[in-house]
Amino acid sequence: MDLTKEKQPEQKDRQNEQKLAQTIQHKFIESRSIKAAEEKRWKREGDFYKGEQWKSKPAYDGQIQPVTNICFSIVESIIPQLTDNRPQIVTLPTEPGDEKKAEILTNIIEYVWDVRDMDYKLIMNERTRIKHGMGIYKVFWNPDLMKGLGDIDILPVPLDQFFISPRAKSVQDSDYVIYASQKSIDYIEKRYGKKVQPDNKYNEIAIFDEQEDSPSRDNKVLLIEYWTKEVMEIERDGKKVKEKGIRLVTIAGDTVLRDEPHFYKHGRYPFVAIPAFPIEKKFWALGILSQIISPQMIVNLLDQQILDNARLGGSGTIFVGASAGVNKKSLTSTPWKIVEVNDPNQIKQEPGQGIPAFIPNHLDTKKRDAESVSGIHDVTQGKAPSGVTAASAILALQESANQRVRLLGRTLEAGLKEIGELIIELVREFYQEERFIRILGDDYKATFISFKSDELKNVKEFQEFNPESGELENQTIEIDPDFDVRVEVGSSMQYSKAFLYEQAKELFQMQVIDDQALLETIRFPKAEEVLDRKQQMMQQQQMMQEQQMAMQATQEGQMMPEEPMAEDMPPGDMEDPNDFQALVESLPPHYQQQVEEMLSQGASEEEVIQMLLAPK
Image (cartoon, rainbow, N blue to C red; front, side):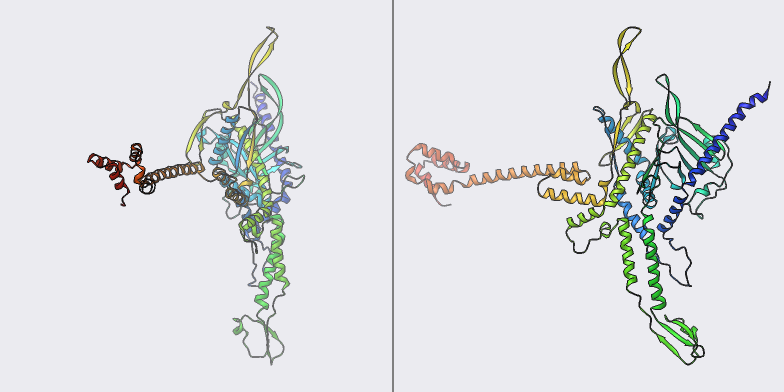
């Protein structure tokens, strides 16, 4: 038995794996090189956001290096406008009959958003996008979720851990995509069943990690996910066809941990990149801080100059002769500056000079420049402009000043739309087993629906000619319907919402819209319950009014006989017995009873009439 021949395939496989790992490492180095300038910019922007804006040492002991952090203020003013309300991701059908399926998919997206805590992740990633120009998400199938059943997962991807091929303009346009993360060697062995050696390569790419906060990396290794699109041969409907699919290769060092062709059926990279301010023919976009750092530095320098002047030059100077007999140390507690001179017989005192007016004026100018560059003005921060007091006018100014933020909202909508599309594709592929989806109503009452991906498919019948029988035969085919995804983010911005509320209120006061339209416009919580209660109250009020009118009519009927009988029924007009009988029948019941008692006692009609006409 020749053992050499048996070892040859194993050696060849190891050589192929090492060659594949080396190729991926080369691609990794290549993609890192095109990011070097961006990483340097991100590091600087991160320092300015945190207030670490002075890199030089103080010019003298005690010199203040002030920071009026405009960068932080502007970034944190934009984020609430984009994330204060949850984005509405809605699935729309493209064919009649798919409305119910589209509604179920909308509920599934809402469910995934809830269980993956996307409200918080959106805030964190939007902060990265506003600061540095790009927010990246990974939308993938996580087999470890739901106790091994698996579910859709969404993770924010740090910018320093994401790499694309040179000259790529978008994620899906890239020749390859690399996601690098730090993992322990214990995790690698447990997940992939292979042992690897630790390395320090993560230190080379981690630009946002604080060195003192970083855990020990003695047992860490850089895990690289290499995603690429390749033409591969697959089997479909019993036939082998060639099509472009996704291939995933995972390596740690020079060890290939996983190599899976045709990883996802949808054939798309599981990453979504959302730019802030895109640059033509470039993948990496600009953030708001890239344009604010320059005026921020000038503001800091002018602030320092004003403080230096106030401390050193504002109080004045004392000139002390070398033989004047004055102990300079006894004067150090004064705010004056002390200078030694050659005249031994004189101590001279000079007042300080005020700072030139152009310096504080220029400081105000640079602060306004920062607002103009960022698009965040006083009116967008809730400060009413001078001379404008009407609420509608202030809201109109806020809406007009909010154009830059609305642009950021449009790019966010496009990115969330792509996330919704990837969720739908993962539902088609992996929701094979029946599972329950939680649906929360407006009152936060939970209901559950059962669902599996087969319910999305449409069964269509057609006729196909069978050459063997020479007849047309009925055939059925399952088709996955297409769905559109619509996202609403801009309407959740506070100023747009407030402006819409103000318009709805004015239209309601003009009686152009009704109660229901008003509550729907402002998205009032539990609007249906409010309308039902109001309708019930109106019905009760109407019933009470009707009862009051009926009681009032009865009381008026009881009082009517006194006046008409005094004016319209003199004794001479009662000659006709029919008239007397009609009169008695028109009387209230208690008068009729009194008349009957008088007649039974023998009283005449005239005596009865006199009794009725007598003043009470």
